[in-house]
Image: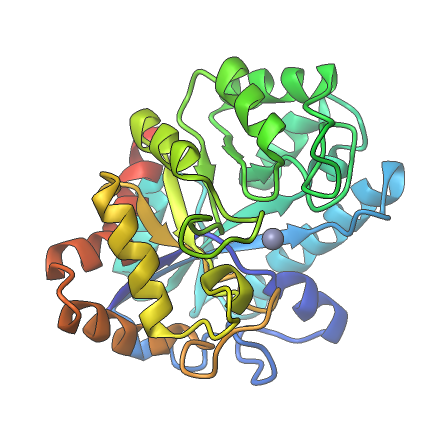
Length: 308
Ligand SMILES: [Zn+2]
């Protein structure tokens, strides 16, 4: 089983608990890494909406430094990837490749030059907003407010550096504006389909197809409420989203965005190594083996090799 996960919130938990990659209290861990033949995990630095300005910059720096200290402590387990080639090399050595991302552009502290500093730290995906409002735009707490002028400048700067825009959490107005401003493919690291589960955090079918047209990625989120209106969120619900995404032409776009340690996940899905059974389930339900492999690893690898 090969796994490329576009989003988890574990790093902040590790930092708060002073825990490491072998921690047994988190959903994501490398305790059972040998069960996966290749693994690439995106480690998001989640910035709460109330942390702003200089404090948000410091919060980011502290968590980014913590990741580097963990890799230094357990170099046999993981290494940081800055490019698609890095992901191939590190996973080929039997280690977990870690891509750093940031969840909420609040960590820019309102400074455009900070985009490059984040890039230097290894951030390759940046979620422009979280649920609330920040200097760049707004999440679903305010559907009327779109991107700010600063948000547009950040997107242009990111594209110059090959840092990828992550539209998960962005409200619909912001999504449309990213389509106007952005010229490079963008991704939704952890969002499902609103037509299958009606939560606003999921993408409309038009939004999904726009990402397909642009050659981006959409990571299936395991959050129970984003997988099903009833809040079950099991393998069958994953199947329903994947099936519809394939109908919408998403075979090269579907990926995995677990949201481990950031949300409520069904008990059969709450560890990386449990994806092997999910893979089998999807094949049993009639999804082609080839598409399942693409979804769990190959689409994301191809994307980062092309875009980073
Ligand atoms: Zn999130």
